[in-house]
Amino acid sequence: MGEDGRLRAVVALAQRMAAAHTPREFWRAAALGARDGLDGSFAALSVWERDHGRLKVLVNAGERAVGEEEFPDAETYPVHQFPEITEFLHERWAGGGEPDAWVETAADPAPTGRVTGLRRRGRGCCVVAPIVLHGRAWGELYVARPPEAKPFTSADASFATVLAAVVAAGIAQAERLEEVRRLAFTDPLTGLANRRAVDTRLDEAIERHRTEGSVVSLVVCDLNGLKRVNDTHGHAVGDRLLERFGSVLSRCGARLPGALAARLGGDEFCLLTVGPAADEVVAVAEELCVRAAELELGEGVACGVASTGDPIGPLKSARRLFRLADAAQYRAKAGRSAKPVVAGRDGTVVRLADAPPGARDRRRFRDAPTVEPPAPGAAEPGPPDPCPAPAPADPGPAAWPVEPPGEAPTETALRPEEPPPADR
Image (tube, rainbow, N blue to C red; front, top):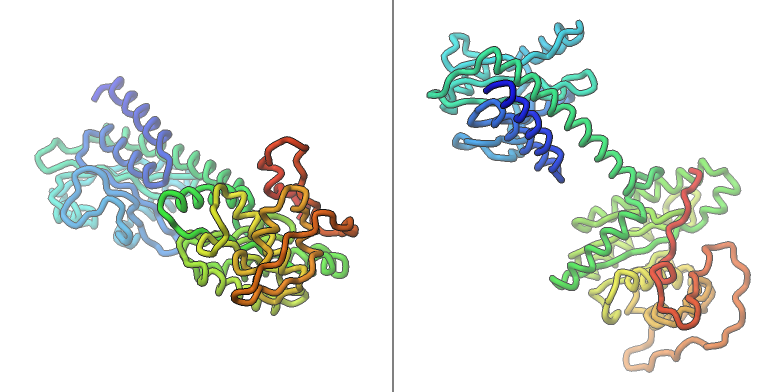
């Protein structure tokens, strides 16, 4: 391959990696781009797991041998079987040398680990290019040819070094993008998902409910006593309480496959599930209330549950499920309930959540008298008083915005806004 061909191969490799949307797509693009650029038949990308002292294969691309998987779960090789890695790391790279690639063939007299692997898999030769990221060994790029093909040359090894550098640059860019995504969807204090992640996942969940009939459940929690802790012990202690409750929420949520544990902001948290039955979610919410009550300095948690597995009526949007769970949570807070309040199993939550905008003031949920669930066969309580007395001032969350007359409810009006960033 001439200089123009190699330049085209570098461009093609970079374009393939840039078009990848997932880690696996990126690994495959890197391996296939290197394989094509070096006229190989097979390529693999591996990462050096320093804590385990081994190379882990991420992808096998091209003409795979019997037993080789494209994305193996457990194909690893102890580093001591490949001493050239540590030699390059400690002797050449540390001294300022370049991580040059090298060639090995099945005909080599020394039975190294790679030579043995070539013979076992019916390959003729390979070129190995170390991948260096941030000045440290990250892994390696491996390209092989069949026995009947021309062996790799020193020029091929030099070009493999260039391709490995291009892959390293792509990995660095992918890591930066992944970090940006992580920061965009993660609460920095607790490490849980944030409100943006919940909104995104909830929209996807409601679509699955519409198309597949999946049960979607939302648990909304309000951590009691945080203001008292902040005022009495300081915000650092309040932050630790939030972190501890976040850990409790995460542990409880782990009982529900695929559950998303999140901090919505301030002292509000939630758990979103797709698939588990409503009763399973309620059982986890009950455990969450018990464990939260055991936290030092805290005063438990007010917990509300809304699930499509309960009789909550048609669900036309994610906003309504959020309103239902939020209303149930405030009913739990109003009654100082030690257990979760569940929409559709309580006599008033569904009507309160579906009331006209002017009646959806959060204070109305919190200050309303506790209503016991109706007895079987009994008539449900009537609608709320259309002309209630003004609600007393309250230091809690602000009321939901009310739409101007004649306008349809908006996203902002129907869902609590994401709170501004805390100074924690």
